[in-house]
Image 1 (cartoon, one colour):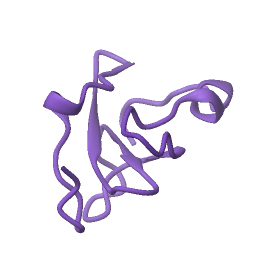
Image 2 (cartoon, rainbow, N blue to C red):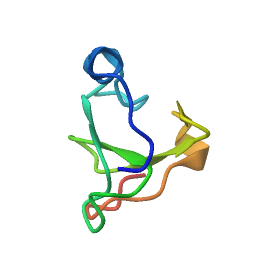
Image 3 (cartoon, rainbow, N blue to C red):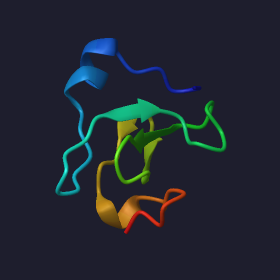
Length: 67
């Protein structure tokens, strides 16, 4: 992952969907991508300039369709 986030930050970040599932670095197809992926719905949230953009409108769909 090109944009490294502090481990403490990753522990508290959660998907903004109803399940509020934890996020993991990277995308399913590209683990080195500057994204965080929801462990429940599979949406990918971009990391821009080192800041996670946790807006559903900015997310890319995961393998399960996400939205």
